[in-house]
Length: 341
Image 1 (tube, rainbow, N blue to C red):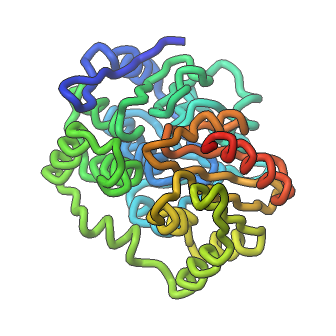
Image 2: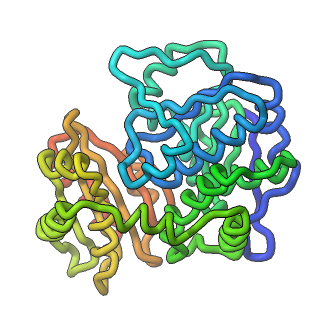
């Protein structure tokens, strides 16, 4: 594995020129690129893919994005200029020289895409990620920095270090990645570096108010009921320090149909005084359970996620487990209660 990593400078994140030399060389030496991200791709994953896609096109390369699922409808504005493909049942991956994993570092995080990729030989893998533990992934070349505000911020530097002008489409992708992972500049990873990148992206033509409207002011009326139901399914443990929300299959299916994301419920629960950990567990139609964890400054949930086979950041992490929902809740909650005691 060849590791490219950024460094912390003057309180903000900045990458040195040599960090990206191997990644740029890999891109220059190859022609066909497959870009994939994790299951249930979020704003950071999709924004990173959009920015990288346009970087590759500007470099004269062939690029195809194939994910295990479609983007949420709120990211439709990205799909207007970036084709997000989905691997259908029985489909084969397109021919490629390099497989790029975005916002994750292991093939198993990419679901059915990763399963198909296991059957492909003779390709190199480039990981572009900022999660803790990303250096333990499946990349032959690793563009990784846990201090970066988002995975997409690495693409911003890829443009700079490659000496390439950033297109409006790529700038929009990077901006989406940053606002998604900094919670629109509310979280602790909102460094001076993150703000400096965002300011430069606005210079490149990004319209923050239009992106905000698309992401948060375009949801159907049905999402109000889903928010109410999600909050109603919440209980508090450990004297109010842990909020647990269990979402059954019918709820999750309905939410997916209308583009409602459980992060809306998470944000409401995180605002409750005294809550150190918010857990949302979603039962999937395939029998698996997705677990999302958010924490206050006093708690580190990355370790819990890792014990469950996942990972992430100190204050935001996740994992997947075998069902049924009740059994998954018992295991995950036990670990969280041990954490806050």
